[in-house]
Length: 377
Ligand code: GDP
Ligand code: MN
Image 1 (cartoon, rainbow, N blue to C red):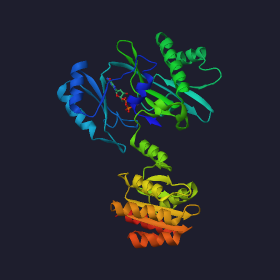
Image 2 (cartoon, protein in one colour):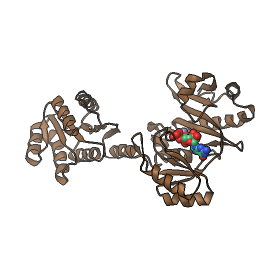
Image 3 (cartoon, rainbow, N blue to C red):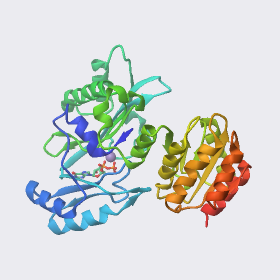
Image 4 (cartoon, rainbow, N blue to C red):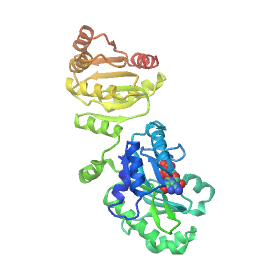
C-alpha cells in the first residue's frame, strides 16, 4: 500500500525531528489562516499518490494571503496524471541551498534492500544516474549486517557530499533503514532531502510503500486513511472477493483468477482497457455478486461492465440472482454485458431474461467485443 506524502511524513516523524510536517486540509481559507499563524512564505502541496507534482504545478510557494487562496483553489481541483487533488499539505517554506536524494527500496536484481543516495536530488534520479553516475551511490544492504557505516561514509564522501554533513546524513540513512525494517516498508524515498540556507537537513518530501502482506503486524500503518482505490480493494476483501484497481474503463467481474485474467485479455484483444481485476471466487452467492457489481460500477471511470462466469462450484442462478437484484434496485449507470455458462446457467439465463433486459451470451469473445463497443459509446 502506498502512502501520500503527509502520511509517510507522519510515520517518519515518529523517529525524525527534521520532517517538514504542516497542515492537511481541503479548505483554502484554512490554508490562509495557517499561513498567518506560521508566517509566510508557505509551501502548498497537492497530496496525491504520484510523483512529479512539482512539474505538474502541484507544489507552489505562496508569499501572502491572496496567493495562498489563489494557489489553493488552483491546486485543489487539479488532475495530476489521473489523480484528482482533494487534499493539500501546507508547510512553512524552506530556504533551499541543496537538494539531495535518498531511497531505500527492494532491489530484485540484488535480492536485497538497496540504498540509493545522491547529492543531485529534487530531480529524476534515473536521469542523474544516466548523466553523472559518479554522483549516485547504490549500496545493497546485507540484512545480517545492517548498514555498514564505514563503507557508507566513504561512499558519501566519494560521491561529493561535503564532509561536514556526512555524520548527519549517515545517521538519517541508518535510522531510515531501521524504520524500513521495523515497519515492513518496501520503499522509502526522500526526494529531496534538503540542506537549508541555515545548514539544517530537512525531510521535504516522502514516498512510502508498506508491504501488503505485512498487514497482520502493521495495523497502525494500514489504518492511515488509505487512497480511494485502496479502500475499494479493502472493501472488496471484507466482502469476500479480490479486486485490483487498474487504469482502463471496462469493468470486469468473473469467477476464478484464471478466468478473470482471460477476460481481461479478451477485452484487450477487443481493443478495450480493463478498469479492474475482480474475482468473485468459487461458489459465490448472490450477495457477493451484488456487492462486486456495485463496487465496479462505483468506479467513475467505468463505461461498461463485462461479467464473465463459468459455472463450476459457482452456480449460474446465484450469479444471475445477484445481478438481477442490483439492476432492479437501481438501473445500472453503464451497459452491462454478461457471459454465463456452466452449472445452472440455463436457470441463470432464464432469470436474467425474465427480470432484466441485459445483453447475455455464452460466447466470451463476443461478450468482450460488445462490452468494448458499448463502453465506447
Ligand atoms: P514532487 O514534485 O512530487 O516530487 O514534490 P516535492 O515535494 O519533491 O517538491 C518539488 C520541488 O518543489 C522540490 O524539489 C523543491 O525544489 C520545491 N519545493 C518544495 N518545497 C519547497 C519549499 O519549502 N521551499 C522551496 N524553496 N522549494 C520547495
Ligand atoms: Mn519529490
